[in-house]
Every structure is written in C-alpha cells, then in structure tokens.
Length: 401
Image (tube, rainbow, N blue to C red; front, side, top):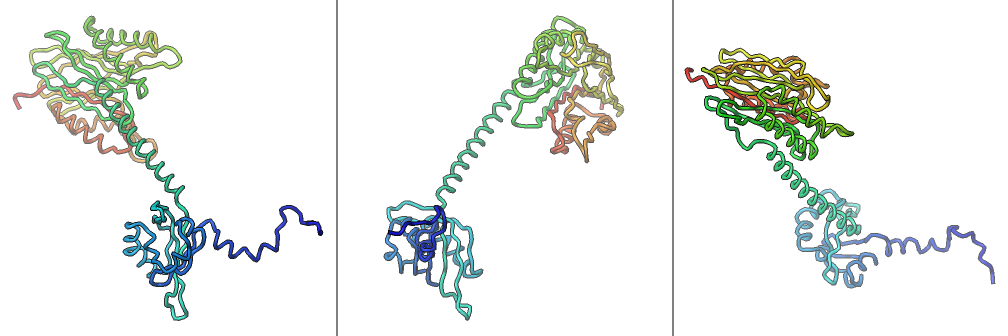
C-alpha cells in the first residue's frame, strides 16, 4: 500500500476533471437554459432543489410558469421584451414558486445566445437566492416604519409640549391689538422661546418675550419655570427691573450647578394713558424691541447693557419708558430672526441692521400686518433659519385713519 504523501491543503489534480460539471450542478446559484420560446432546455441541481422538483420533469415547461402571477406579468410585459431588445438582463427580482407552494425570491441575470446570423437560439439565466436580502429588506422596512412612527410620536409630543408653554390666546387691554407668532426651527425638538400678555389689574398689564438656553425637555422645564416666575413676580412688584431680578434669583438658585440655565428676556408693564398706553420696559440680554411709529418712522428701543438672566448672582438690567400712541406698534422678537444665516459663510440677517430697515419699510403698520410680514420674512430664510423665533406685536389702532 502506497502512502499518500500529499501535503495537507495542496491542490488535487485528480479532482479537476469533475470541477466543471460539479460547479454547474451544485453551484451556489441556479443555472437555467431555455429555448427562444421560453421552454426550459436544461437547469442545474441547485435550482431544481430550490423548486422541489426533479430537473427532468421541468425540462420542456415554460420558465414563466415557475413564477408567481405577478412575476409572469412583469416578465412578459417588461423583462422579456427588454431581454429580446438588448440581449441581456441584470438584477431583476422575481419570486419562484416551489412545488409545495412556497415562494423563493431570486435575482435574475440573463443573456441571449445567438447564431452566426444574429438569431436568438437560447437564453441563459442565472438565479441568485434573495431570501436573506428580502428578509433584510423587510426588517429594514419595518425599522423604517417604526422610526417614522416614533418620529411622528415625538413630533406630536414636542408640538403638544410647545403649545403648553405658550398662551393659547392673547387678551390685550381695550384699545390695543396684540398678535403673536411662533416659528419652530424643528418639529422634533421643543424650543426655548416664550411670550405672554396678561392682566395684573384693571389698570395694569404685563407682557414679556424671551429665549431660554438650549432645547428639548430641559429647556421646556426652564421655560415653564420662567413664565410662571415672571407672572408671579409681576403681581407683587410694579418695577420691571425688580421682576427680572426676581427671575434671576430663581434661575440662579435652581440651575447653578454643572448644568447652568439662563435666558434672555424683555419684560414690560402697560398702563393706559389718555390717548394710548405708557410702557415701562426692562431688558436682560435680549435683542432690542422695535417701535414702528404711526408717522412711518421706526427705531430700536434701546436696552443696551442688560445682562443675561440666571448666570450672575447680581446682574445689571436696563429699563426704559415709552408711550404708544394711535398708529404705533411695539414689536418684540427672539434672536432666531436676527441670527438667521443668509448668503455665504456665516453671514446673519441682521449683521448690518437689516431688521430696522425692514421695520422702516413696513411702517406704519398694525400688529397683525407686521407679524404677517415677519412670518413671510422667516419663511424666506429656508434652511438658514436654524433657531426658533417668537414674535409679539402690540399695536394701538389709529381710529382717525
């Protein structure tokens, strides 16, 4: 007996004679040959095993009869004509039907064998098992639907929470119009912008607009605390600066640790006068309000020097007084408007005083008209609007106009 002295793993030439036939019959894909009329001429063992039938029984049957009803329609109306026109077909997906009725998704690749005269004499078809791919696609579709449902749920939750942080309606004092607008930069996150207008007595009303740092649930908690603190403080103190100091004390006490929270805000008090309203404003780090006069002029209400609310134990806030007469409109807004990116680079909308020019171009104006104009302006920023924007306009109708 002669010992086998071959090195383990060394190629065996004695197996090469069987390689071609074995590769055809037991290939990891199905091989199929049909006549030009679509009748099966030959198929390999792999494909017949997938179909659960003897290869000899399949010879002579139409290839399209092995497909589902939908697959037959697509093959006859689209795939077959394309194959005859171009001579090849690649990457189409159909379902084969096995003998037991189960479906086998496959990727088909085919080409046409022609004679010397260019006439088709045979179709060569390769079928790749697509069951794993189909299951992956189903899981991917399921995951996508789940993600879409989850996003819709989050959006609904964010919208509901956002609405709870804003007054459902504004009830201004007699002789004044009040209009507000909130423009979210994202439907998935709760923003930190807030505003309100409320009665303190028969002769005094409070109002404010501000912006809390951050977004999401944490910012919503700060926003809620800020709104109620301002409302409560205004009941006991008729000095807007004192109201902001009260808010600063609360925020600084609650959020002074590793996750400090702060806000910018303009707080004001309204008192009726003979012809309009006296306004007492205080600002803490917030963009200046706009005042649109009835004669067509416009100006920024100067509150320069007011510091952020909630960071320092004893910040500086700035106050001013003004009078709203018939035809005048006071507009408060958050920095999502002024910091909207425009053009190239990091250019922002109000870098060169564009907002005051916009106000002057829209003055005189009533509360509803100027808010609608700002809404259109915000929509025009598109993706450049990267932060939420709140707008509150208080106007005195000019009954003589």
